[in-house]
Length: 65
Image (cartoon, rainbow, N blue to C red; front, top):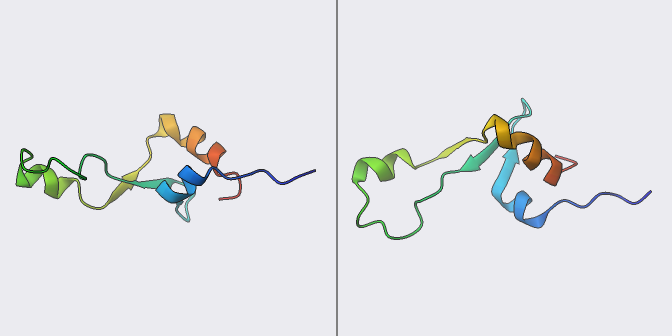
């Protein structure tokens, strides 16, 4: 039986934590930053967890993670 392939886009965007939850980067901080407030940009720093409604879909894209 051949191995399942990992989606290349998913392995670049997500990491699986030791607990099994998936972390992701925050969106909306790449461009057009002049109209966004400093507070808004500050809260978009760092990473956050993938929502529970999307977690199964993300894990399906990374079968060996």
